[in-house]
Image (cartoon, rainbow, N blue to C red):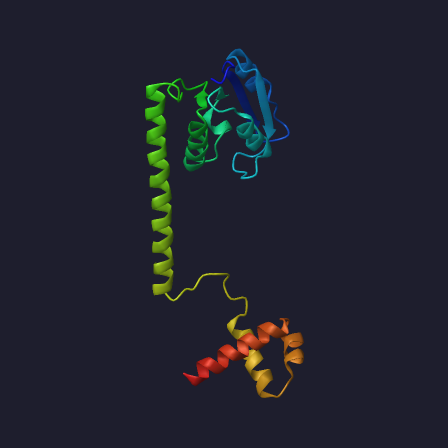
Length: 196
């Protein structure tokens, strides 16, 4: 313990300016928190400077981090796993007040977090697999991704007609209401199709 006793540090988060931290802070203080970090950020927001400051503040082998609910801390199972791994590496305990099973200082808590870590890995693997399958299916159907073409077939035909009449790229672009680059792209596509 490096000569000092364990300190309990609390983290409270609310997502909108209309909400307050009072209820969470009250619970954290009742659980023994002597320092509390308060943040107003969306749960999905990746940038959480107060959380980063809180994690930085926690001392090796001397502190415990407590939150009222799991969703106050992490934005996903993988994010939770990342935070708990960081805390474990520092020897910092972690406890969720509204769920007694989530306490890394107990054997049951460690088991629960082990299961959560496995779920996080499983979710990541599934998401990656679905993404790869989606890309393969799109390629098989001739879709290459990105935004759908904005140039309609009738506009494409008009571009071809005006080009055949010898109008400049600038005049064609002004006539059809697209940029010169788009007109050039469409003419290149038409030329490629004609060459096949």
